[in-house]
Length: 243
Image (cartoon, rainbow, N blue to C red; front, side, top):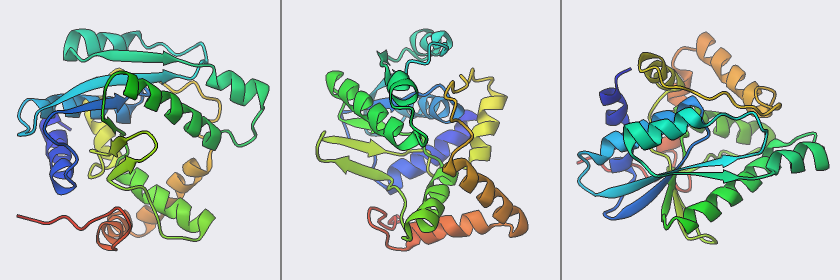
């Protein structure tokens, strides 16, 4: 997939849900994975022509696994995209896996990681943070909510966090994971593999495989689920008004 195609998805999401306003300082949470790097390239490309002017600042929360090589991402931000880049060093991995020995580490890790990210965002003077959740993430989160919580719910395109006064935006929500993989492969984006030992062994991974199987057996089911989310009057999901 070419960058121009990615930009069309991102601009549509930004326009439909009014994600970007004039003068925004947007932090981009960079894990090093395919999704966050695609988002970084997309927002950098959008800067060139979007009618509302905005600034970008890339931020990575280093969990402290000691085997995360961020040198290529530093080079991309500094030399190729010329975007300021901050690495937040933490000992989250030690707290979760060594001190607490969590059997289900994902929830606590996400909470601690977001806290460190939000602190860095505020320090850099950003008012928004862009998360790299794509269409598959939206539907998977809805399925997880149905299966494990008994409610029809997923995260919103735009979320205002009262406690931190930061707005979360999700510009990739119209992209399929396959689109992201296509962009990364075609453009040789240097993805950094997650060093987390729980990666690929979570409830989300189970639901990901379940959705994949459902879509194989019932072609188009993922798109129908996504349509149900966008048109189902869920909290935080206003129906886009077409011009």
